[in-house]
Amino acid sequence: MYRTVVVQAAATTTVRATRTVAPGDPFAHVLMRLVILSAMASITARYSQLHVAVLANDIQLLAVSPSSHADTVTAGTATYVRRKLEHECELLASHQKL
Image (cartoon, rainbow, N blue to C red; front, side, top):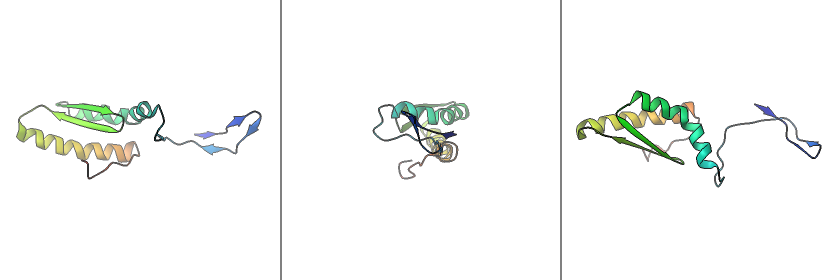
């Protein structure tokens, strides 16, 4: 999206807008939720046995099933979540925290 900013009859050169969530922005939690909304919808559709919780930039997955099955489901989901965040949402995901 190309934009020109005009302030009191002074215009900037045309710039291209990008999706960003600035640290410290009071609306960061809302903006982050909007950025990852479609990815979270596809995750819950694909893994219906999981409960997904999102708070700002923290995504938590809760599997309610026998422990042997829960490990497999959450491991597979973590890979899927990382792929969705990095490729669809164009966000960096910490591989160490997954």
